[in-house]
Image (tube, rainbow, N blue to C red; front, top):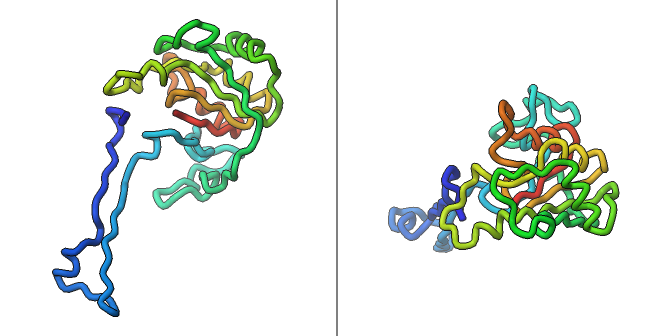
Length: 204
């Protein structure tokens, strides 16, 4: 599924037979075709790097937002994230609810605590917490997903996870947090988890 508000993947040849027909030559008569793929990296499963979002011109760990330029991230880029090998804890809100959560459903700290109890374990520092909201399942048979309304965690739930020392939060949707956002906020969970606590988000 390609979101309506994100550009589709673009593919084009950047060298083909026409280049040689027009006179381009290589030593030994070598000829080659090559192509390029351009796509929005947030259009599939992905990990939000710690340079992905910030506020007040300051990144995680106090780095200046001036480190983020069109040529790349001088600090906190995804290239700085090594392999992640840790225990995963599934918080299954579909099982608790009996069905996928309705778009716009806000999961608060008390609901996260209930899901942790249901999981039969406790959160440990370094865990990867994975949220099953049912959003992905609800897209079966949908030709164009609406990425403006999703179930997800609120700030209270995010802070509970962050203060437990989790290493990563992932979900079966593309926002992790509830959409639409609470009034007068924009990605408040992203701001707290990524910018304040250094927790990357595994989306989709």
